[in-house]
Image (cartoon, rainbow, N blue to C red; front, side, top):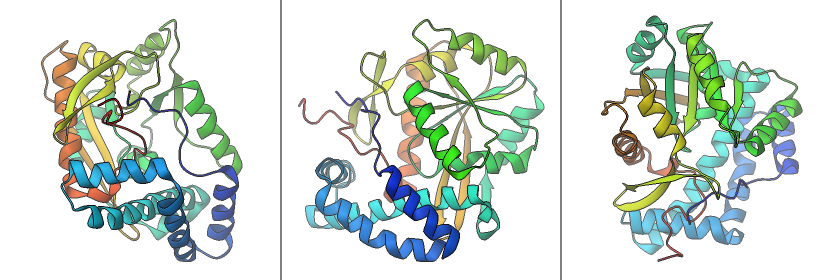
Length: 293
């Protein structure tokens, strides 16, 4: 199954080293060091390399040689987004520029004062979205729906930086009590954010085509999004140049209480953004269940 194991690339020591370089030498030098780290992962991370080859060769149709080169570029861009995330949280936000595409959708969402659901994916650099939304409305509150394991990992990273984030966390619980937390946040005109492309073993899933092949997705974001009477918006924060980001917002148009329809809208949206930014797909596991096949 294409379930995520909960383990991402990188180690705490590796992150600490890059934080040291960012603080003391700068972002561009950190990129230089990253070029060697990306090569290491290309050569020695078997799972990451095979998943990257699958993505570029089978899903996007590049030759095996070109796909191999593109996996390196993908590793490098992924590392850049991590460096950028830490740099921004360390107070270097003014070194980056950004633009909005679909800002009127988010303005309207906040104006309606009934909350809203944002669904993103592990593409681009969505973890810096709170800084974009702060530009739109300084009082906007994001609630990130996540598992306990992911929450602990994010919390540990933020504690390492000694920087507070405005994001609140809603932890997914077996007794489904997180649904009450979501309803409370929506009642306070807050934003609920999901990532719709990873799930853990034992969770309910839905299946849909992505880039021409079927894959499994967590059912939760799409069941909740299709049943609550609030706007659902697909949001991505994509790295465009070395220090420039582009936020995209697209309102989902789907049948009420039809989770599969919402999921299909989502996969079409993710496919669209990946065709614009093919190097920014950051799911390093057997996403399309190729081993089972």
